Image 1 (tube, rainbow, N blue to C red):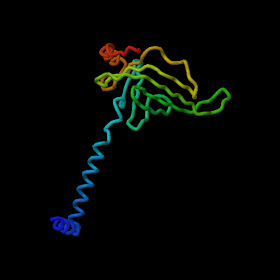
Image 2: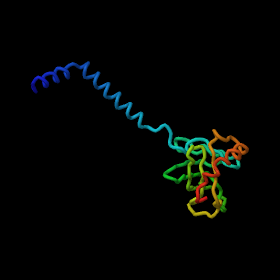
Image 3: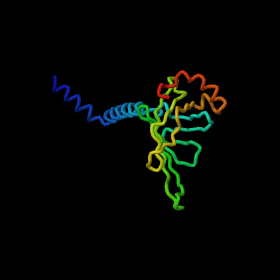
Image 4: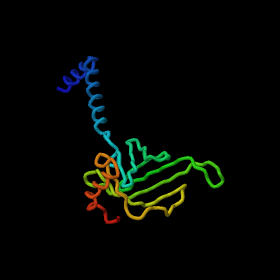
Length: 168
């Protein structure tokens, strides 16, 4: 019985078309599995957001952050911490040009519908030094799909007041 199976296997392997076909099917299945494992987005923070003052933020999937300032910014979200890092050329007190760096870390709570998030500063570093210029209290941001200007923001914000975390 075992010799018969071995002979059949040798016969199948000698047929190159059959081996090529099987290899193609196996490769297609592996490729499909890998594609399905790639996330469609980089999380609930990704997208366009607005603050109460009308400032817009776009958290792009590649980690870039567009915030309407002259800074080049990136973002990272891990657990409940959102980190925004911004750099630009600046002039110091000696009139020398240097690269200014601002790193802001926020504790955030995403609302269940993922259309709003409450943020509170954990740390603010300017050029590597801790700053005390952090605002007190929390900041609410709402997805631009829900509110695209400050008037719409204030109307929509009422809906999220009950979701304000205790640490605000």
